[in-house]
Length: 299
Image (tube, rainbow, N blue to C red; front, top):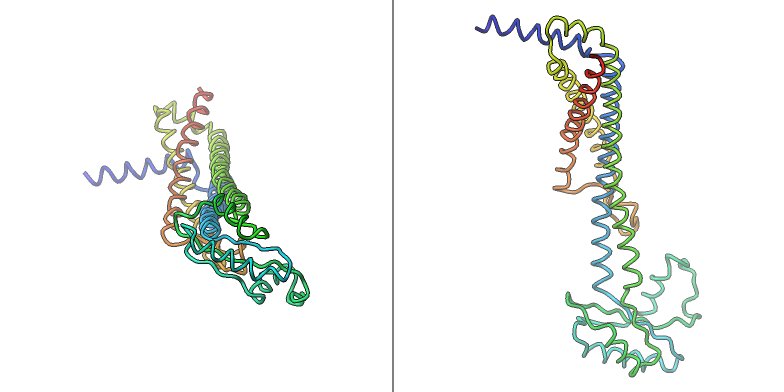
């Protein structure tokens, strides 16, 4: 039985190799396209995941803290700071509140104006840092109380800063997902063109096979198998190279801001494993549709 099956399989492989040559322009095009698209897809995926983490980090950091700015004549600053601290001590949702020192205000201004700024000579407002609990506090109610106790106090709950930052990060994440969709479409289009070119180049072989009884299903299966495996192999190479490049990106750092922390973390690498099978699936359907259309026209 084995002596009968092995020669048959060898003949079938030989015939399929004649239908779809194992090398040549279309083979290289499929491999390179799959590798390049997988490389880009992994970077788009890393960008999407990183911006998702960034949006969460910004939202959490800005949502749990707020400040009170006190602008008043120098002789009234201390009294109003004390009044604001008393109000905050009795405000539900406020965990702690403290006035920032001149040195801390200088550190906050240093990234914008440098360390040589004469802070002592400037009429800087007093700043009070507020740390709130998970439930937060009633901002409108607190503003009304502060207006009555300290006219120079202004509450900044960071909502006007948090909203655009989180929205920008969310849009970047959406852009990454849209990029993956575009990459998938381009991959399907390029593999379709490669399959059609291979079918057109081997039209004579296909007609001969039809004359000796080969069905279109058999010919189509040969094309689908070859192109699917080529796309999978190319995507595997591209994913490996992209994974190595992403792994070398710097980790998240406070000083680096958005420019760091773009690498993937922990379980997120599982998504990278899905890229080669996805490329093979795209190649399978793209080649199947292209082969069916081309074989119909060759009738």
